[in-house]
Length: 210
Image 1 (spheres, rainbow, N blue to C red):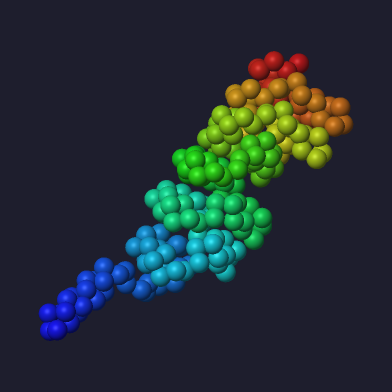
Image 2: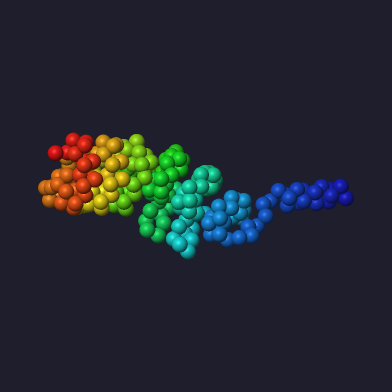
């Protein structure tokens, strides 16, 4: 009888030693700090990993926005919803692509995330995002550089209207049509000249616009 009791006590001790400790900080703070140990504790203790925090983001959104590959991989492995939307209706894929985190975007794709390359290219142009890796990732995944927004502008025309020379240059280098016209019938070159954008006008002319 004593032997059985001792074995039971030993079993409880072993289980107790193997069980993870309770988290000592909130999930919000753990995500902000990138504290993977605390995040693992929250997972083990059943914290909802799809809940939106006070800023309107789920843990996966935060990990992606901060470019934390290891935490993103952990959350995906533990079953975090890759389709969960933030307060603005954006998914982790949106934040990975527009935040210029292509390796994380690839992780999400492998996990089954959806990618609307055309829509994200228009969003990137609308926001004036001029990072080359964003344009490269989207074109590599099938984005149509001639796709048009609600006002009839391609990403290149949007960049021109913003006076965003860097973005315009990347789009041209990746193959955007420099002779495209807007809904008003003006060419890209005419729009650039009308706005007094000499550098962009020269860029267009050097690449075939007349």
